[in-house]
Length: 77
Image (cartoon, rainbow, N blue to C red):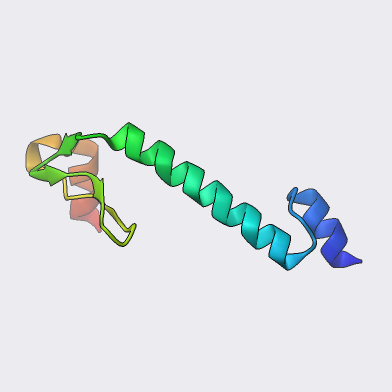
């Protein structure tokens, strides 16, 4: 009973196979959208990209891109 209620709340299938298939499809669409958005944009000294294995690679920002607030927080940490 709890599974049905939870799945209804999060709008997911109660059958694990159906839910997994839906998640795979959603991930595939999202990765495709992400590839379109990233294109060949550059951040700092490298490209924001997906590795051949599908891992999102975000290079560190260069020092000039870091706001004064972020630098102050970094110093405090």
